[in-house]
Length: 170
Image (cartoon, rainbow, N blue to C red; front, side, top):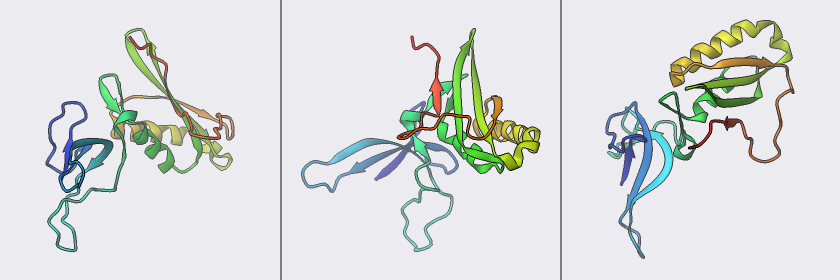
């Protein structure tokens, strides 16, 4: 049995189009049943039924993120994977980017640094406008965009630290 739970409220989500945490119950285990295991995987129910005729629900697009990665910025839950999806989906940008969340008085500020490819350096204004529009649609937040030259952002050997939350934890 798989359930979808709202990350913020814990309410069960039945309708397609909303994302939430995947909660798994497996009663068929031999040693001990697994009841309401929180996988922390973010998924979304699909609209359409399975073409094979099964009646179990389908997950749209697989796992789209992790609940552990989600942070609240300006009162909105932000998944770094949503930013990555926008950045990687735009032509003219390199693979590296960096997100910095800082406190500016009582307000949270989000700075997004991206690398422009050499062949797209003359399109920085268009790229910035596209980033602003797509990020607003995807995350409902405003970003300060900084377009950097190719190969200027840090490189990482292991897991990239692209999301930096510099707000003080109280």
